Length: 360
Image 1 (tube, rainbow, N blue to C red):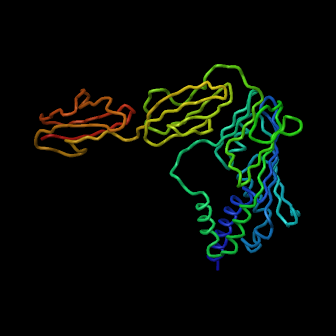
Image 2 (image 1 turned 90 degrees about the vertical axis):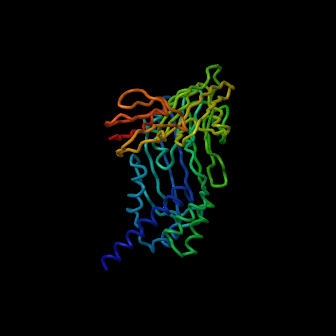
């Protein structure tokens, strides 16, 4: 009996996680109102709702308000939270409200990044909020969501369809009141000229949110930090792009993206060109190589009775140096003298291959 209770609790936790993330927090209804001050401080209010019948259907009525609030607290630990039962467009719903203040743009970015990795830029010239660019293998997000729901809900097709319907019909909006007049945006400007509303519902393909307050006359090109032109790296690289004028796009090896924050980790040569809305642009090229050089002629830990011809190569960044017992050698060097040897081969990205061997 005790084991069955544990299993039920684990299933309840899974149902809560998927439902709240997929339906509540992406929302049957999720409305966010933000006020930003000139110094980057401001306030954040979010109201999310999900039909009570869907929650009851998923959990058998076992999900309490305290459970929901505890889960929400893990996502928005800074927020003042409340929950209530309300009629939303004729549907009895659970309504969760979150309120908090932020001191600066960094804190604001942290608030927005609780559910998605985001970059936020705010200045007297422009506001920009964009997803952090992290290229991964192509994946159908809709299929991934369906698979997750199927794993949790099992063979309950009726419940699966109900959840997916909520997601497809969800209303998601973000409103930001700025301290400056907005001249250009991909949202809808309010009557005061300073407030912008973005419709982020599922059928809207907006990823980056932006608002331009004034177009600076600066001819200064965007600047890259985190990577240097012509450099080799043996780990993932975080590239941040700062621009006096709002960034228009970044060309990453022929692909145009709208993010000013990139994390690149796959082995490759990269060419990045950042272009602002005035047409100023700058380009860098760098390389990521995480593979150690290859060595032939000797195997680590082996003992040989005759001469060895040591060869080495690197298909990525190329060989920087190779040393045998501290002395520089070239590929193809023949070693015949008896003794213990340590070969260290280093490529231009700093990857090292060490081989220790002996000749009797």
